[in-house]
Figure 1 (cartoon, one colour):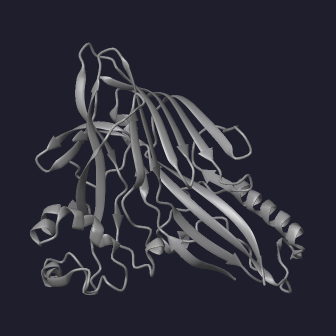
Figure 2 (figure 1 turned 90 degrees about the vertical axis):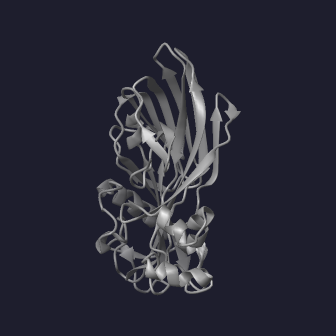
Figure 3 (figure 1 turned 60 degrees about the vertical axis):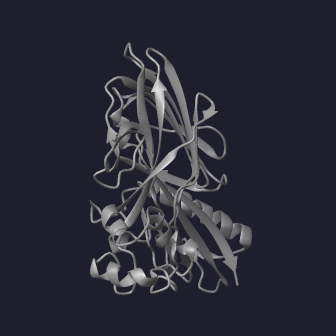
Amino acid sequence: MNAVFLSVLRCVTAGLALGAVLHAPSRANDSTGRIGSTGLVLQKSDAIEMREEILTISVDRISVRYRFFNASDADIETVVAFPMPAFGWNPGMAQWDANVGPMRGFKTLVDGVEKPAQVDVKAWFSGREISGELLSAGLGSKDIVSRLQCDAETVANKCWGDLKATLLRRDLITPQGWPKWEAQETAYWTMVFPARKEVRVEHSYTPLVGASYQVQTGNEPLIAGHPWANYGNRDTKEGCVDQNTTRQVDALRRKLADDNGVMLRNGVVDEAARGNFWLTLRDVEYVLGTGRNWKGPIQRFVLRIEKKTPQQVVSLCFAGKPRKVDDRGMEYEAKNFVPQDSLVVYFYDLAWEGK
């Protein structure tokens, strides 16, 4: 049979935005903005062009390099924001199962100089911001994030202490003590785009990666889609898994079978074989859509995908044919690029575990 042993939800990663108040959990490419009375607000720029974006995605690291140009005759001082993934509480039995938490290892360089960032925190529930409700209930702004990291044992009581009755009455947690909100942190800083000059901005950070595991035993076929697609919370088309993806996974399985002396019959494991094939899917999401907040299209966009091993199988939805960089990397390039809303990259690994 094929069984899903664990599924860890990924968090959506985004790019730079011009700051201004977020009306929904926003994830984006870099944009400009302002600081409003209720927090950071994303805006559109009619003067600053994005001349180049080079986005590199792997399961371990995401890095982005931008070249901006202020096409106006005046210096522009503005808030630049990087919305982090929104995340909620997950009833996983261990924190690594839940895969929730603030963005890790976020770093920004402006023209090669590290730029310290401030952090704006908001809480969301059903598309509505509830930060004020949580604060008036007695939580601090840091609690909006930290209380989402209570484990399954402490979230029922110890996580809330004397605040539990108030939070329950205001319908901010479930009767079991589970938080209902998602938290979103947005890093932001003020910078100047000089008139008629180019500015380079770089980001790098560790993404929060979704992970799903499938095992093949007996004579059941190995699936190369998303194991949660049948449960309605994963779009089977999001990673453009097709016959080519399936062929690559099957070819890898045949090689592993040969290497381990495993008998295959009609493309599946012989029932007498003592062991299982394990298919691991790691998925990374990056929202490109707010790259549309800058003046005009992105003049040059480069997408680089880096595999952890040469054997790793990659699937994604992106127009054009990639160029092979080396045995672990491939690269797409587009001119005058109007970004799609989001990009999901599937990374498949296959292993044989003998009994």
